[in-house]
Image (cartoon, rainbow, N blue to C red; front, top):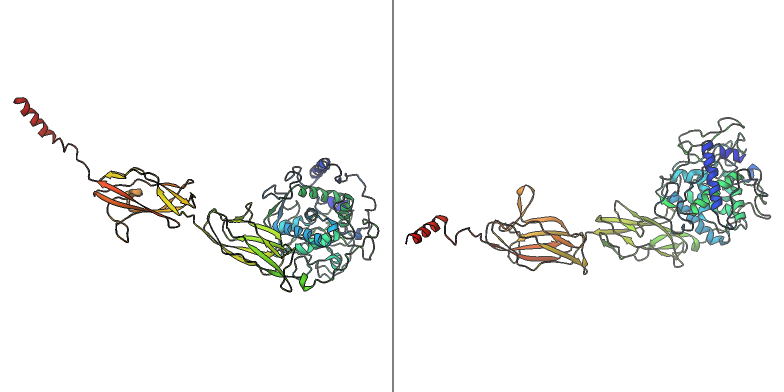
Length: 579
């Protein structure tokens, strides 16, 4: 039955053929010892065909599209996630953060399970299209409910209402709820508070991902073992097709993925603005999505109502998580605070020398380890952390502190802020003010030594300068050139040499000049003017470096003065000849 439900969301025979080819390609690419995905006609694994109400998803609909045949990255490179990649390999930022945080949390309490976040991502993909492409708020809660169809036995499992509509709004039958698609009765057993806000909300990706992680790790499963991982997936939905689909996305995400902004994730075909996926008629027909004003997802089945092993679990495996004692104040996250970060100032294009550091504190005010912290650059600035990332997620150490990567200023100048928050919580953030100043130079000098002279009415030869900052070429530094008086407190000189702007306007101050990549600057033509004398030109850089140079204007020589006029010369010549 689950296979039928899965197929109803296919896009036709072409998609089915492509999906089969993708599965074959993935299976062929796996190395020795890697788990294989079952073929279309294979039977479920031994002991993996329980009744509909014993699976974590109720064997309800899911998205059967498989990942692209081309992988997002080379195998084995998913530790350092690429900044960019194919659209299908992108996971919305909050959704990815929730999966990774769940892996860290489960590793701290059940390390033997070896839960990979990519498995959560694969399940989240087929259950809700990664929360409908990451349409969640700042705390990770879906912007509108994601509900599966009514589990009324008409083409789906029959699960009568267990929550009086509290979670799913249906007081007759249960519906799956949230990005990981839990039915209310399942949530009552497995629900978690993943973001530390004191609530267990199936519509919150941090809560739902942690609940899914606990469910997959229930009992003594070791998910690094192929058989245990298959059992865990089948416990979510008892279908070989479901296992193949999840396995395909799992292998795809393991080969690399990247973060995309919330709300911009790729939606599976057929996932539009409809709220529910409900059958259009009774059993035996192919249901299709029913549009309605809000988002939708696939339904999640009910787990065994009585304690005891499920058919897909190893003997003696419990059907519900062991009771977890309430955390003590020493284990409770109370917030994050500045851990001694100094002023954040850098020139355009330079790295900030100060590193942002925060400390997570518990209910007693002491340090708290293993807390996920999100650092985010805010505002319309082009500053970013190492690798060009504007958002990074790190975990506090044993002393409760964590330091952000090096922050580098972009080309824009001005102020912005960096916010540090406990990932997925509504606890107050720590905000750090940062400032990017214009590039500076601490020295500027003329590159030539010859005397600068020009006749009145002529122009000076090109004059070149070089600016330095800490003994290195200072590129992109703003420079102002001004003709100044020779007074003790010089001002702009209104006589002598001048610059010429477009249209022939004479000016004696030029702004908007800038050094090139080598720190050099060549001034535009300087006109000598009409009055002979010695004048002074001053260049001032951003940062206060200055240099003064002398410009000498010589009186213009008149042609023929020394030899007399042409008439006089001719008369003298004639007189000498007559003699």
